[in-house]
Length: 360
Image (cartoon, rainbow, N blue to C red; front, side):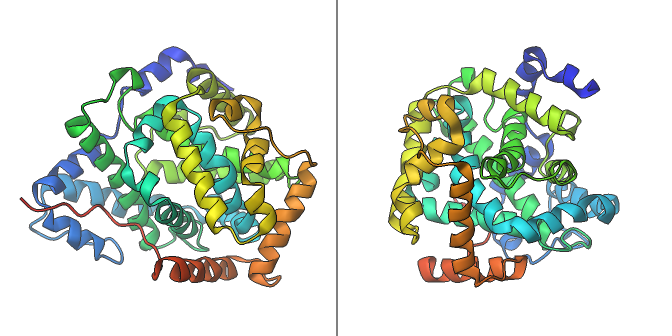
């Protein structure tokens, strides 16, 4: 309960002005020498010894990850990987049908997202990259060695820093009333959407996780948060804290915006074109509204949700998953299926890559 004392407007007003200095300094160095971006995109893992020609800001950034390996605890982190092994298909479904549109309903945070042309014009690729990110960080045994999972987290963290850099340097329409772009409050909220909101979605479908499973996922995303530059002293580790943090952020930022509505309309259009399951395809808007609830649905101008019990909707998602995986719903089958879908749709397996900058 002690952590709840920090969940106040005054504290979170300060968090809206704080970003991620370690990553921001690294991106400034990359902008000055874009050739290093290509090198990093070609890495398979973070090298144990940084190249001698890398600027100190970049070395410091990646050495942070080499040092974090010492903090890895299988006892604390493996339970969440086991949970994903069992529920991975539903977890990813909730990211697409609940977590992402939920983020769009928060007007100030949506202002960053809508300024990325890729999220509007290449939404399929962005969704695929998000799925690849989640698959990598939940891979059985991820983080137990200095492996690809650390590099993926480092790249996503740098992508956030690139967003901050380009908005602050080139977005003439950025309003400081939105807060600093990709600030600490928004990063906490996004982490919450990828954990607490996913679990709440499972509960709405009648697949309520146990208290132990719930807290194992929160512990896992605290670890991910540390790797993503989030100030995790504010991160919840109990269901009560997660509920109160979400409640605070909702009160502060859930409201209608043109940015949020553009984002959710793009998401719906993509789903209606690409989801093969006719039930999920035809009822996409209603399903989003069902999970989001009345307040968030109204903020995004979505029609009321489908009028069926959540348990029935859970059966639909479960049946869709079983069709894809032939009854073998585990991590290996999920990854194989998603990579096959990506090859069919994009001609390649999608990976997290830093934005390549034009050399001047």
